[in-house]
Length: 276
Image (cartoon, rainbow, N blue to C red; front, side, top):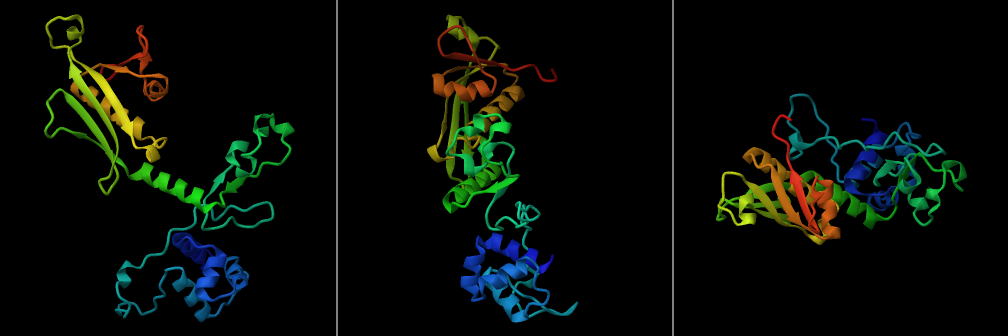
C-alpha cells in the first residue's frame, strides 16, 4: 500500500480528519495533505512515525525469521482501504477519507439539494449541476448511518421455543450482544375453528403482532421477522397466515406479500407449495 493510501486508510479507521490528525501528531496539516496527495516523495521517517502512531497504527521493522520486540506483531494487519479512495471531485480532489461518500444517481441523493424540491423538475431544468458523488459533513448523521449499516449486517433473527406451547410461534431479532430489538408473535390453529367446527389436520398461522424498538425501525428488522415466519411456515407445510392491521401497520405486511380480505383490515398471506 502506498504511503498516502495507507495514511488515508488509517485516518478512516481512526475517524480522524486531516486537521484532527495534525493536532494529535504535531505535524502541520499542510504536510499531512502533501503526504496523502503523494506530493512529498521523501518524507522524514520521524514524521511518518508520528502520523501513524497518532492514527492508532504501529510501525514495525525487522528481519525475516527474527522475532521483533513489539508485542503481538503477528496481529498487526494493514487497515482496509478507503472504499471511495479513487473518487475525485471536479477539481480532482479526493473526498475526505474519514467520511462516507456515495454515488449520486438523482438529486435526492445529494445533501446539497435536500432543502429544495427542484429534484421534481426534469434534469434539463435543474438550477445546479448535480455532482457525480457526495458525502455528509455532519458527523452525527454520518455516525447514525454507519450505526444503521452495522445493525443491518449483524442483527440476527431466531425462533424461541423454550417454555412455549407447540402452537406458539415466536421470533426475536437480537444484536450480537444479545440486546432484543424486535419481536414477532403468532399462533397456529385450524381454519375450521373459525366456523365453530372441530379442528382438523389443516393448519394456519395467525399473526398476533410485530414489534420493533423505535430507533431500529426502517432498518429491515420487521421485514426479516416476517420473512423468517414465512420460512418456518414453508418448513412446517403451513400455507396460510392471517393478520389484523391498521393502515400504518399494514404497509409492512403488504410489502411481505399479505393481501386485504373482504373484512376491514383483515389481511391474508398464501404461500405456494414448495417447488412451485
